[in-house]
Image (tube, rainbow over all chains, first blue to last red; front, side):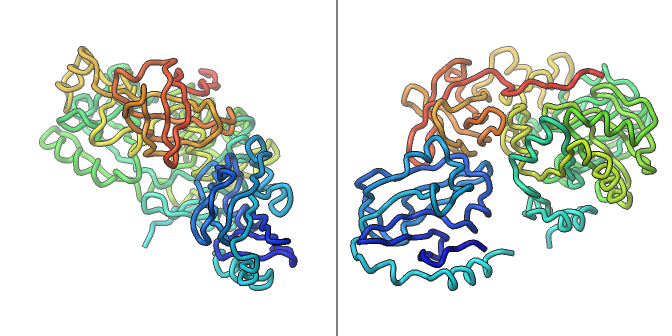
Amino acid sequence: MNAPDELKYSKDHEWVKAEGGIAAVGITDFAQHQLTDVVFVELPEVGASAEAGKPIAAVESVKAVSDVYAPVSGEVIEVNDALRDAPELINTDPYGEGWIFKLKMSDPSAADALMNAEQYKEHAASESH
Amino acid sequence: MPNRTPLYDEHVKLNGTIVDFAGWELPVQYTRLIEEHEATRERAGLFDICHMGEFDVSGPGAFDFLQSALSRDLSPLKPGRCMYSTMLNERGGCVDDLFVYMKDPENFMLVVNAANIKKDFDWLVSAAQERGVSLSDRSADTAKLDLQGPQSATIMRSLCSADLPSRFGFISADVAGVETLVSRTGYTGEDGFELYCESSRAVALWRAIIETGSPLGLLPCGLGARDTLRLEAAYSLYGHELSDDISPVEAGLRFAVSAAKDYTGSDVIKKQLADGAPRQSVAFALVERGVPRDGCEVLSGGSPAGRVTSGTFSPTLKKGIGLALLNSPAASIGGSVSVIIRNRPYAAEIVARPFIAYRGGSK
């Protein structure tokens, strides 16, 4: 299972890259694999406020829609516009070009409470059947 | 405890993602839905459809019985030919949609939806009282495999020495050593075959087709691709476009109803044919990126006009498509509507159906 060590993870299969109070957020490799081909991403509005654990975006595959939850609270300061025309970036590069949005965290240390890569791998393994 | 088809172990071996479908454990996909969809459009796909129901209807009164029970005029049927029809309740709503196979003038096979097997059988038994007809439910002993796509006939020719039937025709033949009813029909909009055999022989038939078809690019396909393929072809799915409360006229299946004979529900149907139905099923495509889903509300001129009955992202057209049941005044081709997806309106256009025209020949 691909889950880079430098990232933090939520139980809802989002990853967080926290730097200087800003959190970049996407969905994990495990999540994109479960979803299969992503064909549409509903991005949040810049300026929207995100509450930890609440849906803030949506990722659609051919078969189903899946909510993306805010892993930490904050304000949306940037969204990945490239996903509007190339939603498949979430499949091909989930931790890179497939990032979804960036938050200015309400509590800059909030990401510390999320899972590390090792913990996330165990969590994901327990959810795959 | 969900049901398993005779091919369950094959699906597990092929790493299929198994889901519950109408009480059956079936693969939604094996590798990637879009790959499986494209394999069927461009080469060939093989589907486990063993969950569907098969009934035998036989006896001297069988034809007259079916003619009075089903909505379509069956008089064009001949031995070795099959027709699509619906069976209706008194309100003109659809009990089920089905295929009728004429084996000979006194022996027919009906192929019905998995979720409706018991309902259909009970309905037919009550309709068949004292008609000189015997009915038997063969579903548990009958396997059904669908081989679909432009390479299907090539694959069949190397497994079967008999002359293949033309579209809507069927034969009994030896296919890779398995006694099979070979029907030139399908649910994808491509040339292809629906194959029926004894359940105990399903694995042998499945493996033979995969072995012969793989070098030609055949993939086993799950229910996910089956749904996107049928929706591109704008074929109705019972429980979505059709239900006990939706008539075949409303669903756009005028070819499957007769104005010239009497059958259960025919009073309502004849009135709808003459005066128009209050609702109409339409095909629509989103004009912006998005994926419509079953149940989404549709607005026309800002007012509620109906709901999406099936929606998906079309792997062939690369856009959101669907079928919607709308109030008839809103249901004109070329019309602009909005589809509400997660509280946001998406612009859509009503288009001619199907999205992808049938691509097989008649031979």
